[in-house]
Amino acid sequence: MTALDLILVVAAYLLGSISSAIIVCRLMGLPDPRTEGSNNPGATNVLRIGGRKAAAITLLGDSLKGFVPVLACHLLDRSAPVFALVGGAAFLGHLYPVFFGFRGGKGVATALGVQFGWSWMIGGAVAATWLFMAKVANISSLAALVSMLLAPLYVWLLWPAPELVVAQVLITAVLIWRHRSNIRKLLSGSEGRISKQPDSD
Image (cartoon, rainbow, N blue to C red):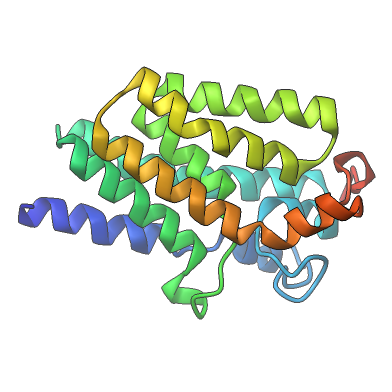
């Protein structure tokens, strides 16, 4: 790994550590997402406590945290292992942000940003799966889990670099772990539905 590669990895983690949910809620005068709703600083909880506009801005911010560092890898013509490390660093930054006491979100939007950064086809396949599952099941966490479980397959089919496949498998495993409370609710039938979230500020 070169010095430039190391800089890209560290920068990706630091960018991932910027919590879009917390910043958006502060700027819009909303409660801290770490202490309201599900206590998760992510777009779904911001939707719950602040409405669609705040959630959309949060979703965009979280996605860009994953997309921008990987885009830099394209522009700088880095190798597949660097793409994998940079994507993983951005994802971990969101989960364990150094600027916010290492207490971050569950990582779905940032992971999607990483996937779009790797390849628009990979990101598009994951996003299409999420949208389909969200439409059918009307449960955000289930849509996220199914789309991310299929993500390693999409990476293998569309950019079969071993490093990227391994990185996506690890990202998926961590996402499942971070969603363990949601999985328990899904199994008990108590998980909230998307349509029950507030639809305005």
